[in-house]
Amino acid sequence: MNYPKKIDIALEKVKETTSTNDYLANLCRESKAKEFYTVMAESQTKGKGQRGNSWESESGKNLTFSTVLYPTALEANKQFILSMLAALSCHEALSNYTDGFSIKWPNDIYWKDKKIGGILIENELEGKYITQSIIGIGLNINQEAFHSDAPNPVSLKQIIGAEVNLQEVLMKVVHGIIGGYRQIEANFNISQLAISAMYRKHLYRRKGLFPYRDAQGDFLAEHQEVEPDGHLVLKDEQGALRRYAFKEVTFVL
Image 1 (tube, rainbow, N blue to C red):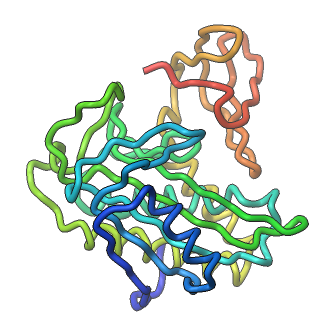
Image 2: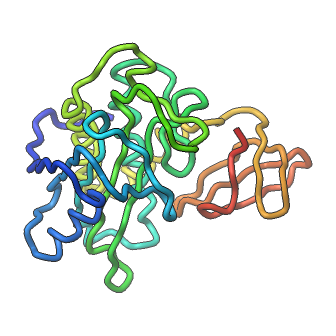
């Protein structure tokens, strides 16, 4: 993705908070956060993942941050473009350091078969439009060991064998989000095509048959498409198409 090189953001660093999404949401309620205001925390006491999952992060070792957008012209049924954009921005930032990263639908960041990051987007709506979007991102950067029951975490330091400046990675990610967001504002239709194509290109398990699990049990399937509203479409061994919303299907690792 090619964006303008110069983008200024307001960055607030905090020692500890429950979650950067909560912290930034409180600022927004107090009308103290302009668009692209970004909060970075050394430690989160209640770091959140998708649908209430927790996020393990050693204090001062990883990136936990949130940024706010006010996409008031974006309809709620088109909100998945923000999820794709955030995931692509993380993918591109990490790919500056080494290869092997992918996006596990809908917006986890993987290195090979291990999870290096996750994204939680919390939107506020008014009518059919999004009035506020807080994009929370957690990336494992310099942590050397993980102690939770998460099955497959990995950090950038574990991958490349060297520490990385946290703010450097943050700026690369936020730069990508803002640049892509400005293109969405300028021309939604063209941006959606470009972002969707790039998102599909970098999807985890994009080619081949792999094991999945849904409410009916385990099955083998191959990736078919991701619809504009974010639904995942798989084609199973019998050639049947299966369509899933978030959390309706699990990747069996």
